[in-house]
Length: 320
Image 1 (cartoon, one colour):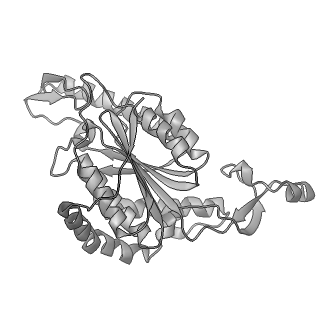
Image 2 (spheres, one colour):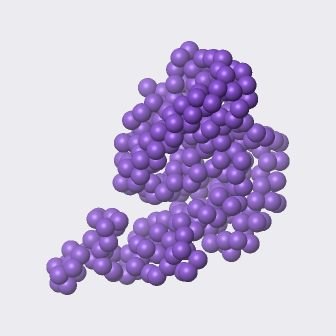
Image 3 (tube, helix red, strand yellow):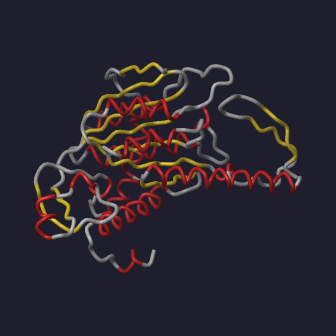
């Protein structure tokens, strides 16, 4: 089993400060204009105060059924709660070797850091606390949940530190990261699982167990070259997880078709696993605009929240 280490507070590096400052002046300012301060769409909670009752819908948590009202009215009804003003958010961060890949100007690790920086700062400036479990190499590290801008800097700094190299032939086991998070997250939280999900199989069961207690968002990192190979002639492909290298002829149209077919099959299996786990999914590509991706995701969360509450959708969402 991987070792889990707690990361003590330490002065965050200047590179993390520069990155966060850039994100605050560019991405966060754009998001403020688009979301109009509605950061709460990113987080859900049950709180303690009963707010309302409504009829049960198939996607509702059965633990919220009010059996007295159900027996009296003859139809299942669920309790709705006021959300806590302050909540915990956790980032489960896959920093395995495959996230260092990028076919363009950005790697998946850089996309991951920018996403974490934006969302973490968006949440902490509204009084929420954030923590992180960082998975990579042969150990896992924990950054306990705290609030404030300094906490965001600590997280970005930790994400930039080199990981312990994996053993020869070792591959990513996301199940280990998710299983380690289960006993660690005692309080109901919003959990962002940030990974490219290139892993040994079997992780979706542990992800599904997280969903039973927490609001879980899968943030899937990807690169266009992982889905389709262009005609580049003879190239050397290296498996980032195992280090194995192979020389391939991408000019061969048959090889490119086989690659695309295998990639499409993996895509279908991955999306099916995420659906089975019952999580909302945000896909972040290395060639995507972070603001556009976050706005699409927030629209999805708003739409599902309205469906859960039995409210009609706005026209621009109902057509999506």
